[in-house]
Length: 198
Length: 132
Image (tube, rainbow over all chains, first blue to last red; front, side, top):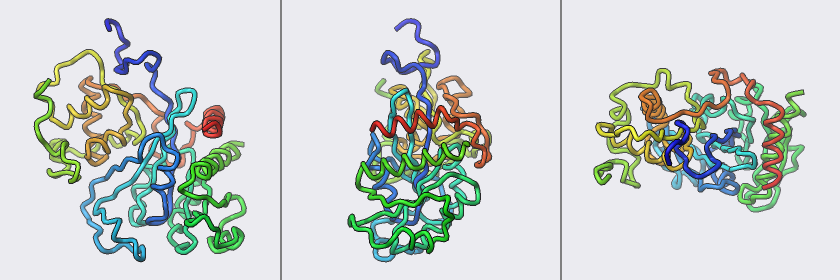
């Protein structure tokens, strides 16, 4: 058409104004279900992006028997997107699983509403770097225990104690495969961010 | 425009990249592109500036961002190029008026800076997620 606004390539009617973009970070240990979590609620299939690395990471991932299906040799992270009413796009960024890639997290976390730290109670220690990271920067975060087989194996109080979480950090059960459960986790993060504004 | 895409690394779904990543940026690293958020949206400008002489990677970015708003992260994923490379290419394309970067919240490199996150924004997000 003749006179489109110069900054609007999108031709379909009302979409000339760019959506407002927000993001929530999904963190946690290696292979804890971050991509599953994102995929359960994202409008698009989770996408994968990479940062160029000079150092490769073959064979040093400590994830028990699951190393074989995670053989990326670059820093990879998965993300998804949810369109919300009012021209809001919510991005969900999964952190690179291995804690030696913490240097990348600033990029992900800058401007984020908050974070969900996913926890596998069989490998609790894997979430320590994430908890430390968010605590140290006063980023609102919740801890969500991923019930892999739909069964909670541990009491939340025990998990809280094991992680040394302060009372102010919400701790919930989730199921990364279930849209209803991931939705509740996201709601909990946004509610926490709102409380922090007070 | 049949000559838009020569067979290249972009067409190969199996390998991440077949040239050294920063070859496509002419060897430059991020610089001012560092401040470009992963979630920043871009769109190709409609003036129809000739794309002759642009690299296949840049043409691919312009093609993707002509269809809909595209975040830097999505461009990186679809082009199978590292984020740092896409940031440089997008900044270049913006400087040369091929595309528009739609500003996100005020750019601050401090992770602790949460000034862009307002109550009304959070309320909209909360209502939106609850309605999913």
